[in-house]
Amino acid sequence: MEVFSYYLITIFLMFLSGISRLLTIKVRGKFGEFLGLLMMKLTKKRRDIVIKNLTLAFPEKDDNWKNDICRRSFNNLAITLLELLALTKFNKENINTIFNIENIDVYYKAKKQNKGVILLASHYGNWELMAYGAGLALEERLLIIVQPQRNFVADRVLNAVRSFQGNRLVSKYSAAREILKEISSGGVLALLADQSASSDKDVSVNFFGVDTVFYKSPAELALRFKCPVLMGKIIRNEDFTYNLIFEEMEYSDLEYNKDGIQEFTQRYANFLQKIASENPQYWAWQHKKWKHSFSNFY
Figure 1: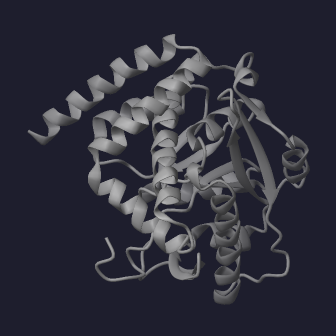
Figure 2 (figure 1 turned 180 degrees about the vertical axis):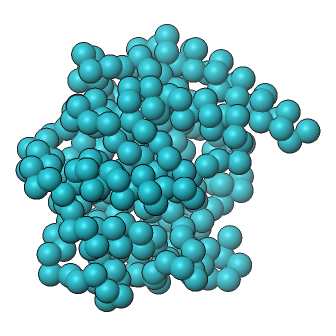
């Protein structure tokens, strides 16, 4: 029965994709706002998680503010989904109608070092478009490390969209060899590193004033290979186009050891806290970021 539901969900996503591809950029965005409101109303459990997370991160804010950011965060999720489902409309010739890299020179400077580049992203703004658009704009086939989803049917369909223009996807459970090959050959490795990690394998750093578990693998890779690390911030404009801004992480003072890994991860957490504070509506507050920080928090 569970597998049957996977196919039903996938059929619905394909139907939604057909609609999304027919819409203009602006109409798709407006439809996403409506869909986000519907998602928020129908998923009380996730809505409660968002409010708990916002209360922890922004204790000084009142309920009206938290409810507004909650609504807008669901809007962002729905817009991201609709835009993901329409990504195959975009190619090298027309990607600039929806996506632009403001400081592309930062990437070219990093690339010239011939050490490989780590693109460190987060579930902020439209992270799907960020990877797809960056691959096209940079004329680079990114190696993207992904978390396999329980619904393997929908996962297969969505991964086909993500890789439509040449980006390569590999499961995080079998990525070690591909990662080493990518960095050694001077390629670009894309990582989403902001979800809750393993409390017994990863590292705990300060995030919004709370000891929070983050993945340590980005730090281990960067410190081992000494390759440039670009953190990405993708901003949605009022017309539903996007600007991507790169910020290079400075970590030349760190060594490849426990303390270096800890500090590197803290610097990434600081960057994430900064952008999530500037535009909290863009971050996916729906995940259980602090499940290892407090017992029975969720």
